[in-house]
Amino acid sequence: MSATLNPNIGWPVGYISETMQLNYDPRLFLGAGLVLLLIGFILPLLMVLQITESTLFLNFFSYFALTLGSMAGFIGITALVNRRR
Image: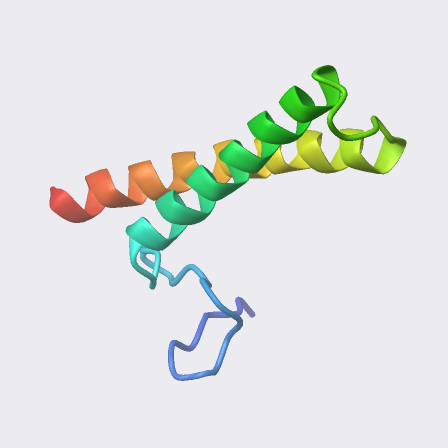
């Protein structure tokens, strides 16, 4: 027996329906991706300029901010292109 997604069930934010359509505005992902990319760029810059101390937590945080920002931006751009077709 195969399970199907019921769109009437209150799923968490941003679930993908059976037609693989994102149920939220792509600009939300683009905005979040931009903010995360800026954080991931500014934090290492501040560490190199020795304005903030380079810690293991800040290094990993900036890395994950860059990675998640890139993913969110990519998802936002592809959803925007699919929506405009």
